[in-house]
Image 1 (spheres, rainbow, N blue to C red):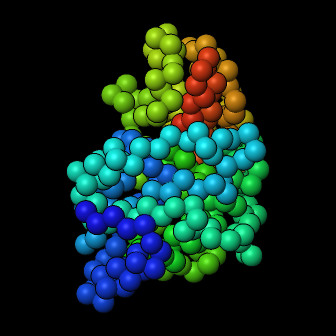
Image 2: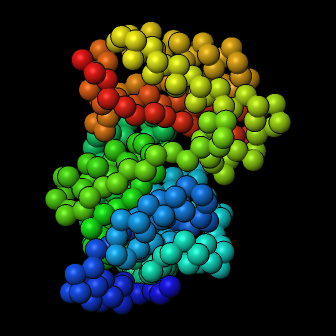
Length: 283
């Protein structure tokens, strides 16, 4: 596995690959790799000649109450995992390399952000979009892989690729789950034993909702109430939100039709869990 820290060197390396007709799959990360990242890498590995991964903790996507300095970092561990997963090139630039001076231009995201978790993270997706513009131009991937665990981020990236005409195929990858259906997350270790037993009810509520829609229910409020009742009845968690939107536009729905997302966030004692499903609602 090749490790590159310089933007210029990375661009030269990618250019040589492109001249040889190689396809490049790209997984951008902020490091501290977990099974979700590795799943993205394995899929990208199977679909491309070259697998490129970036590890860069992006300071401009952190809000005032989010501590950039305390974000977990372990490059030695991450490098070992990346190499074992078949990564060909690991791009690990410093903050100074990516932002040598104050930016004169940044991306501003206008839609798909004032719902779900984005409602509480003002400016977050502007930072995500800005760093992705830079990374996409540096790595020039044929395909970019993002996990649907953060379905809102996938929606924003979809808009970015479309609006700026990047010649990149966005590949959303399904949520990795435990055997009991709980979405895998580093936050799961913060659940108490009782909360861990309750947590699979979140995905269970989403499955129940889909079954009702498959049977013909088209009223979003009815589906929302069904999910709320199931979670409040079977868990000690406090619901942050239960929301249904058209996907990936994240527009509100008066009637369920087309591709939709059902997304939930639930707060437990020391962990806030998110989950979602996306699917097509037939006429």
